[in-house]
Image (cartoon, rainbow over all chains, first blue to last red; front, side, top):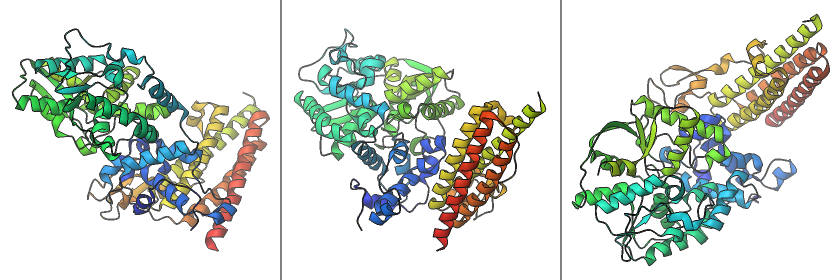
Length: 387
Length: 172
């Protein structure tokens, strides 16, 4: 059959869908938009139609290629991976949506709201377009870097420029354990995970990934530690999927703390008698299957009560802050974030703790806008407070 | 308020009621129907009604919703509730759970088999009736309100014709 829509190689997955609809109610974007075409199944249905249409359909004036309407629904996605988690035929939705968004960008249907991020990373190597020389401006005086480090601390754009308290907390942890470390400063570029979810995967694969892998490998460090769920996902999963194969181990700070405790290099001395609600960051928990390590790291803290939000782990609701969703659909993203904060408030906790600085920024904004009384704290900050 | 103004306000309330009812019906129908082709058809129809709601609200103000007259053009009862075909548990369609709270089966057990021909039959019949209603309302209105109601009548007349063509194609 002559197909007119030149799709990326996703036909196998598109036609594997049984249209069961398990992915529909779990999709945070569908929960807000309410239209079938905004759900994973609706998008797959549309893709299948485009894949089957040929010249006769064109004569009958049917739409044979995805246009602006489909592109708008392609970005009704937070990149949370909930659809992949429930799919009974194991469609790899997580990468499929990246491919579909990339296809829409190549076909001339990008989201204007997201283009500045791409330009910022191209010009300044961070998503905010800030001066790359200031990337390590947060470094506290007690930070002593090594030229032959045990680990590279991968800071990430958010902790470098917007939530620098997270970066300082990680330095406190590394110093407490006497770990030798190095920070790449301007040589650290955005990991590209946010860009890949916005439809710019090709840019990340060709330009950003090789630079970042080379920059880390050059230090001679055997491991990379990060406190950012998105950066963790980039190094732990995306780069490997794209053939990058990092020549070093990749740790989220929670994994690394567990390792340090096991090796008796760190001790938790202060008690933190409070209740916190733990939010599973999608890119670390659901996408990289890392549910236990942040919970284990929090268990080390004396008198800290970790409360589970409902839903949690595989079923956890997304923050709504990923894949450029807040830029393209701000109201929907705020509603998703607000519902998740309400889940945290319902536990009776005074703080919401998570592992994703992107989610934290989104939660902060929503909580401020909607006057919600809960503090948003990064897991690294909690750990640092207890040392 | 003069009698003419009162009549014009009532005509807008009738028109608003009809489009709100249509928007609500198609929203629920796209949730409750089982076939994805039918879902996307109801969604398309629902989006058109939502666009009409926006036009009328721009003319009447959002508060007019409260005083709208609902003409019962659409079979809302057929889609407002959904029943689990395994255990018979009934839920409100607008808050359809991801699995049956009684027997635990998946969400699709609540969905109804609505044929695509049925979807277009509903669209044809209701859009013909609503086009008539908009025309009657336009006759009682003047100025911008009249022009808007005439525009809505034309849209629904065109929709009725489109639905007729779809039905003919499906039946051929």
